[in-house]
Length: 159
Image 1 (cartoon, one colour):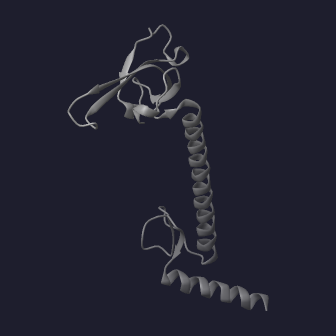
Image 2 (cartoon, rainbow, N blue to C red; image 1 turned 90 degrees about the horizontal axis):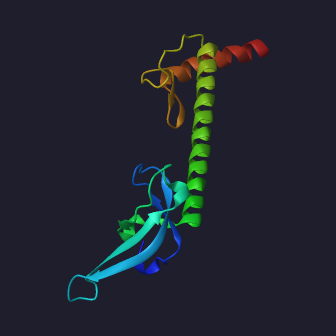
Image 3 (cartoon, rainbow, N blue to C red; image 1 turned 90 degrees about the vertical axis):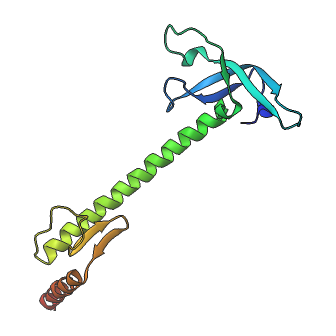
């Protein structure tokens, strides 16, 4: 985050120094900008503050941290909402993938039963009549032939 956009006294999200996967609240107490050269672009900023007491480990002292502006992820309320929404969307997408894979396995099992052939153990190996892949269910040429034969027999029985 740009140092010019950070407001003293506000609460921002940062990755926990102890656990990079965990977000913690960071209260900004000061911003230090130091000129490092003759150009207006030659400067370095440091954001000083501390982790909010509720996010510190029990018994952990409040330590003033000096962070690079890039370590500030965003305003706490907005950023934590986005992270929660992303986790929810990822969980929903994973559930949909698992449901799709389960349906493909059920159809595979029924197709093998229909053509009266024992299914191989691993559903994703190549060289099978009916194979489960990332895109769904693949049917090879031999599988198509056996499936057409089985369906034709079923149609003859019905007629």
